[in-house]
Length: 252
Image (cartoon, rainbow, N blue to C red; front, top):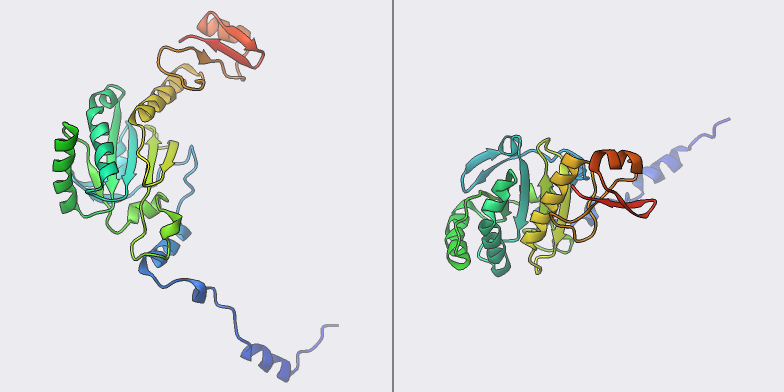
């Protein structure tokens, strides 16, 4: 038999203070934006579709999925314009434009400033890097895209009016799926050659059905996946070098 709650007990329950989660949340606007974005943020797992967005860039407004089209795409973020490490990075990627073009890869940068600032900064990048930036850079002053792609430094959440955007790299394939992510602290510049190497590995793996070992570069031996028998690998690739039953090398 259920017990009855007396009127006195009910009034005491109603009068008791309620724990308020929202009272624990700092009131900084950037933090509120973070909470809202996190509630709606997709899971950015490898193999998941890259979230779509519209944004202003140095080459006009884009729809990100339309920008990708049927190409491989690299999206990389920067904390701010006119910062030393970012300037060296964008110059390095710009100098490799021909290499990325040869692989059918588009590049698009992001920096947490307004469009007008980007235009002025590109002049510095071209001068310092002895190059010509030809890929677009997203204007993300409100951190909307940075929050969508979780490119935010945790230590800045709730501590600053504007959250700090870290250095992130997303490699996205023609089906718009995320194939690789890299995240660096703001103090550490990326390795542009490594991004190019990963593109080579992913494209070779997709085309040939192989895996690549540590420090692999084009022309090195590749690995036969465990799902392929040695006999089938020999039919497909020719010579197979077996180091262990599960570790077999071949050439492509």
